[in-house]
Each structure stands twice: as C-alpha cells, then as structure tokens.
Length: 260
Image 1 (tube, rainbow, N blue to C red):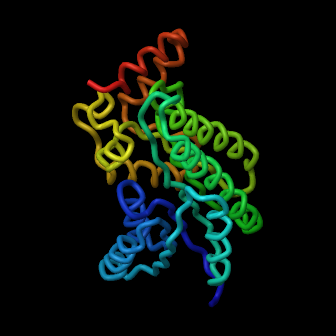
Image 2: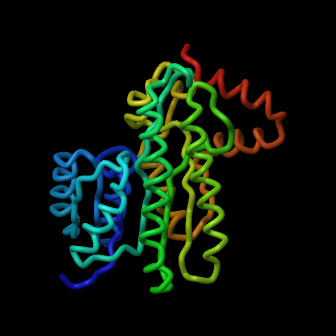
C-alpha cells in the first residue's frame, strides 16, 4: 500500500478516544484506531466511513500487555502506513488501599499508562522528526499534579505522563513536532465505573462530557500547546495545589477520592 500519514488513536472504542476519532474524521484525517474491543471498533469504523467518508483502519490491541506496543507498530508498518499524529489516550485507574490491591492490575496499569505510551512515542517519533511535522497528545489527568491516596499507582502514572511529555516537548523545539499533555478532570465516561470510584466526591456534581474534553484537547494539540488543563475549576485546583503545603494537598486529595 502507498505510504500515507495517519492519526493513531489508542483507547478509541469509547469515551474521549471515540470522540477524538470523530473530530479527526471531521477534519479529514485518515485514522488508525486501536483498542481491545474490536467489535466496538468495527461499529465506529462503519459510522465514520458512512458519515464522513473517512479512511479508517482498526487494530485490536491490548496495550496493558508487554510488547503490545511494538506489535502494534509492526502491524502499522506492515500496512505501509506512517503516523504523523499520535494520540496516546488509552489508560485506566483502580481504587483501593495499595497493600490490598491486585498486584497484576497495578502492573498492567503501569504497562498501559506508562510503558506502552512511552514505547509507542519512541517508535513513532523519529519519522515525525524526519518529516519535520508531527503532533503528539498524551492524555494525562489533573491527577498528575499531586499524589492520590487510594489511587496511588494511577496518580503516579499520570504524573509520569505529564513530566515525560513536558520534557520531550522541550527537546523537540524547532523540529516541527509538538507534544501536548491533555489534563482533564473527572469526565462523564466509563472510567469511574471501571476504576470503582463512582461514589466519590470526585465524580459528584455536574461533569463535562467526553466530546467537550476531546474538542478542547484536539484544538490545543493542533496549536502545539504543551500542557492543556480542561476546565476553569480544574485550573484553579491545580494552581491552588502549587501554593498549598504538600501534606495538606495529599490529605485533601484523599477526601476527594474516598468513598462517600
């Protein structure tokens, strides 16, 4: 197949990832959508092709497993495709005291949220630099800005995403490649159910929908914004956390995360 530039979106079967896929299709981008749920990806592919005449490849991949990122990259290359926009959206969280948490789940979270994200970025980035154009968006969270008792590993993984992305954004100055870290707050997706945090202060009150967050993130990514915190309230909380004593921030975070 003739080499062509595509937008790769991980975790594209629902939530923010699915909305990003639609936004990219509207903007005429060719898509590679990746997720574990191939049936859902097939439905999204059909929808985007019918509504927007989009060119869409779908690949089943569980990026929580070792070596999955390299296998995904090999499959993309075998199709003769190259990626000039990478959206590392896939991720998950888990609730509970660390010593009682399922270790396998914690390690899979690190694999997905950190290792696969890092590996995909490293594998795809050189071609972007060679082309002198590329956009990378790594989806973190406002959780990236402080430790999170009862979700300790999840908060730590998002801190990695933020710091890693800011660092390589600096390294890539002048190359034509930009790196954006999207930091949403709690959002109306299935994240809270999957992470078992539905009945917490974090997910109470009115929450933004995934489409709103996706539109915000896409706009900031295309502009090359380095850190994009969604929502005025979240921006205020992040700023307040920077000027509040660390121990107090951790205690306040626990109250937000703990079950009602």
